[in-house]
Length: 257
Image 1 (cartoon, rainbow, N blue to C red):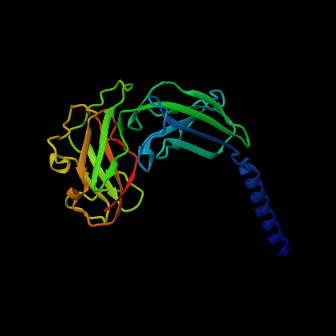
Image 2: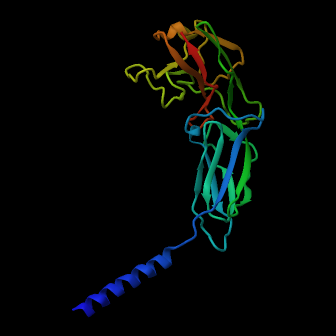
Image 3: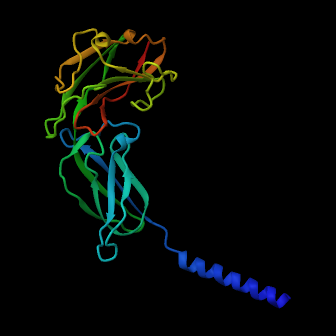
């Protein structure tokens, strides 16, 4: 009986070792880092907390070894940067996925990047945001900002018909349209979203679909929001026809009432 048990145990151990030998691949030891930068001004982008769901894609650049490589997507952060510190050492074709964000890909090409063990490859892509919103200036309870269109983006980027200009408010420093979603009929404490109208701006201006942003300064009183006294974080968002469902944003500012 012991002999039979020993044989069974030995067979099981051989199977385990054989499986380990077959599956023991080297761990990824390389990295990649980079950014989507503003082609017009050379600065960083103003995106949502999730990078407006913008995507930079990597494909292994070895047709003989990988004739149909799988997509490997890098997450773009709020400032347009992206990185991954666990990448296999290979040659990759890297490119932003067209229209995965509120910008136009300027170069419309890809770059070949070699990732080596214990090294980080760096790559930068230029994109043209559809709109620029200035940092809102706050004086007492009055907020002033401007919106201008990119001079580089060639796609149709006129305003959409609905919710094309938003004031977004939160009581902590995470501000985008998915977080600040307290609109009519909803309630999430201190996470507010206002579609800009004549009444909000207290001036005869309502952004209408098919029109262009004028570049003129716009002001509104924070008192029009009917918010209780306290400290808030605010930014303005604009939504264009060519934006693939994504918003361009202003920088976030702190306001205390």
